[in-house]
Image (cartoon, rainbow, N blue to C red; front, top):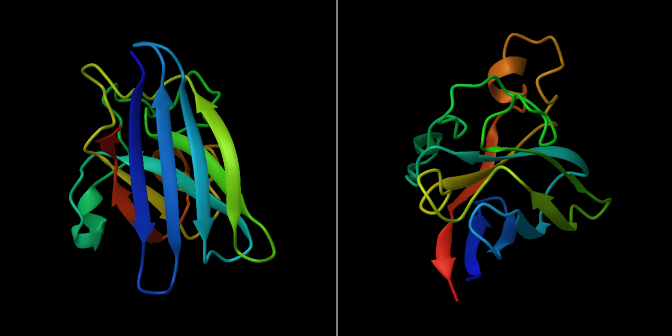
Length: 154
């Protein structure tokens, strides 16, 4: 059974985005379709955070979703948070339009990302390899530009 989810990103500075998630089989990969506008050109960290709470802005979303207690890493790394999705790259017009596949996140089961927040960050995620004091926890990706809750859809 295919499961579908969506996350809508907005902020007060005209950043808008929609991320669609599709998972065809429990335990199988999740496909993401990412459309975002209003970013500064360049790379931006892109993560699932632990809470679906945006009552105090994106800060209420908590830390990266990390149920296995691992250090921060790249999407292809064995040692990574479940929520580590790497970077998205905004073009010269501040737009992102990309399809990604992730084999760690899930839309079903005990570690589902449904009801959790997706956050787009101010800076590039160094994928845990930057040597900064926050590299192994946040990828040194900087402030939270926008967030939204991942919700089930048709």
